[in-house]
Image (cartoon, rainbow, N blue to C red; front, side, top):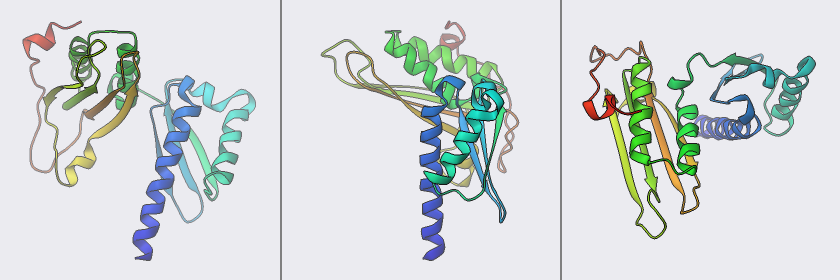
Length: 208
């Protein structure tokens, strides 16, 4: 029970740290965070599109974040490093934010999701799924859900850990919309199958 409780606490701390960094580093293009505990230090790696904004002048920003990890979240000996996102089109958080911002500007949801998943797959993903659910039409319309899915995307078992996922909320003037983005990264190996690049359906291939 002690081990299970500690495991749950660690997950909660990681989730809280991720939410905090998402808010604090939004202008740096925050995508995700990886946390690795060792007997000596806790390594915290943040993935962003603009590392300079995280480091700050003379390391001022990253030093402030380190102190926050100690005082606010009780992390022992935190060591924060910054990694630049290699391909924003394959980062679920960044794709989700783009979709949410576009929905808030009134873009057509179905066309937007088709275009986004086309970009994901064209950048080498082995599978992807995007779901938008909520007030997707004008004021007074019922809430509905739009889902697009391509390639291989496991839904059960340990292999689901190989799927990157992000959940974002959009707030257009006619009501909230939840956006879920799931991506299987290029080169991911599954024990039960070998995946090949798929051909895009005509309706998605033609999207812009």
